[in-house]
Image 1 (cartoon, rainbow, N blue to C red):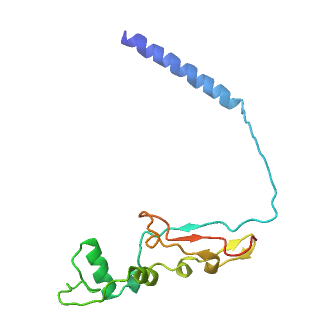
Image 2: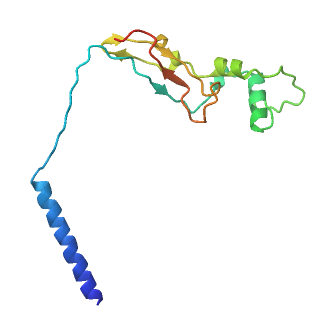
Image 3: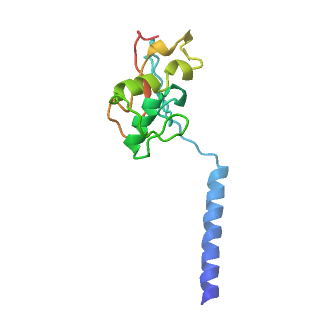
Length: 149
């Protein structure tokens, strides 16, 4: 009984393999192509994600203190010392994000669109923190800030 099942399966496999090989060797192809020429292209939206939300070099001891408190970690200063009697002003998260977040000027090495150079001024920065977007959302994106090229 097992031998019959094995032989039947082997025969079915060989049949399918031969049928697939013959179809492949016929080189069938179907292409449906619609072309449309446009004179102007709109500057595209671009997403640049950086998993590191803050530049450590831009954080102050007060920023580290407040960010540690928000994550539930014991507050420490830049050198890792426990802050026991440190007094800092209340945190301004918009200021912390704007001051310590990654800058597009530092990340954008070159940009060229339709034969014209572009720069960070051609992009609109969108912060995932300020827009209340889910974690892992883009921290900067492009937007059409100049006429189509």
